[in-house]
Image 1 (cartoon, rainbow, N blue to C red):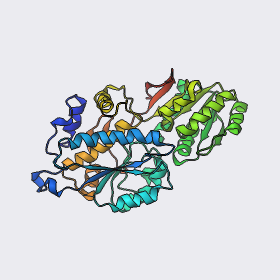
Image 2: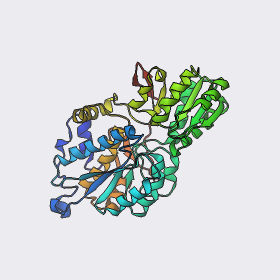
Image 3: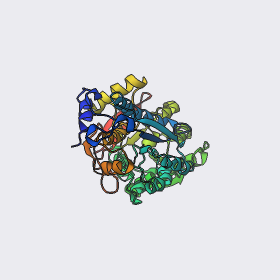
Image 4: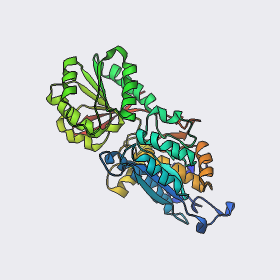
Amino acid sequence: MFLSSKRVAGLIAGVGLAAASLTSCGTTSDNGATGDDCDVKLAFFGPETGPAAGLGKPIIQGAQLAIDQYNEDADCEVEYVKYDSQGSGDEAPSLATDAAADDALIGVVGPAFSGEGAAAGPIFANEGLPTITPSGTNPGLSENGWDTFHRALGNDATQGPAAAKYIKEGLKAKKVFVIDDASEYGAGLAGIVEKDLGAAVVETDTIQAKQTDFSAVVTKVTSSGADTVFFGGYYAEATILIGQLRKGGFDGTFVVADGVKDPAYLDAGKAAEGTIITCPCIPDTDPAVADFAKQYEDEFGEAPGTYAAEAYDAANIFLDGLEDGADTREKMLEFVNAYDTKGITKQLKFDEAGEPADVHVYAYTVKDGKIVAEGEIK
């Protein structure tokens, strides 16, 4: 049990983080460092602007809350910097190079998306910069041998089978049409769902990011006689797709995953009603995150969105490391690799590939214009 687990336990108990002590930028007199010696940064890497900014905002704010609470009692403050990738794998390498060149930066919350994670990962690994993604779910990210990679949630090898199980057992679907958006995340997840559904899949198709005319795929869906459509992709396309599917005559169930779990998806209006959303993200109504949700809302004036709690956990792992004296990349990487402490979303511990030991997948549904938690898919 790490010393800093007391801060997390205090939050869960409603005591708050103010009880934490000796936060001299992660160092104390025991290791000879003082506040004057501290020049340390933590970063967010992901979309702050662009078409996927809605998914980036809760992550930014979740990490921000953890850092703000830490800085309240710190002898020197941790600086929080943001690398706005706009969710693009094309932008990621240059941003990752810039981040890696900043010697004061010793931890990254992100990359937020799988595509940018694949592009930035080798750069971070080469420079020994530890990363903890609170949202990137493509399984392949942990298969590259990057010691710096860590994931604070279950990957699509767990989410995909959970979604397929819900479709088969919860919806009793007979004919499923699977669509993906050709992204690292969407195509990978859709492929897993398709494999697990087996003979229930009547047809598949692929769309493109930023596409707005889905008439061809709508025709294929309605002609297939599918009673369920699974879409692997993001909310920008899903919002338009479901509207056109409904107008085209599809009256079955629309099933999506975490990339669509954003309030902007509700812009689809009545067309979105009944949509099933799977996500390895804990609901903000869960008692485990009740205190966090209240503190988040007090600071930002809104309920925490998708992956805010996971980002909060990720940032706190790094902050725990600073309290323990991990004030260099090498020390921080060693600390994170050995981490085993209860966070607010789960027991936070990583295997040798950086995958979490504790995994949960939840189902949500769009009901009366809101995204409502149904519960965990066991």
